[in-house]
Amino acid sequence: MTSLLSTEPWLRDPSVVPMPWREEKQSIPDKLCFAVLRNDRMVQPHPPIARGIEIVVDAVKHSGHTVIEWEPPSHEEALALHDIILDTDGGDDVWRQLNILHEPVIPQVSERFGNGPKDPVPTLELLDIGLKHKAYVARYLEYWASTVKHSGTGRAVDAVILPVAPHAAVIPGEYYHYGYTEFVNILDFTSAVLPVTKADKNVDVAHGDFKPLTPNDEVNWRAYNADTYDGAPVCVQLMGRKFEEERILGIAMRVEELLKKLTK
Image (spheres, rainbow, N blue to C red):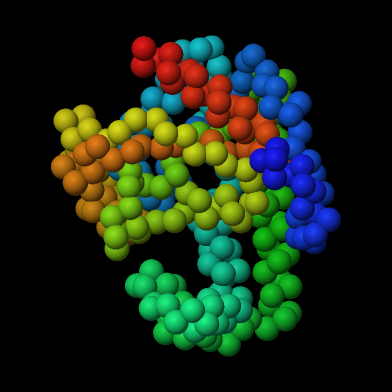
């Protein structure tokens, strides 16, 4: 990133924020406060991911860092906004690119964008969507700032520990929930993915007391098979706020060190 940003790409690309890599932001305080989001109240992660989350939580707690529960504004609302924004052009851009490249339409695209472009969202409706989007992000930022009351560090939460996806690996045709990354896109926040462990069929057993939160949760849960996922990589996500790339990279490196110590 340092090499890339040293070329000052914002002088050529108007969409790039004029911000060099800030090394000083990678300097992390000795004591951190993490929050943990074990599920988004829509789809619960499979056993390997749930275990991966707890491994990270245990590692940071063992090193004296604070961990609190993350209870943000509804992620279901974020996903609804994401889907609306994705469809504002009626899928025109997607279909234009597919037609140029003569690419076959995969099921995941047809499920979301149908069999061709639709009418775009009217201008006034688009403006209203933009206002709703900004209002949601503002509420999320307000919640994050409020965690200073519980962090014990004098700062708001430094990073949130959460799943990247509800499963350990993507089986073609069985990716049923994108919510753990879509909401980060809606917020335009920073995220780092950290490898933690691997799925173990002898440990990551699906227990019979599972209670689905939503119909999609049940579909995702039924797709879990301990033998199929055995050995698949288990990763977690560390999320920070907007423009906190350096800080989250520094925190991810710290957590990686803690995980190595825990497994020695």
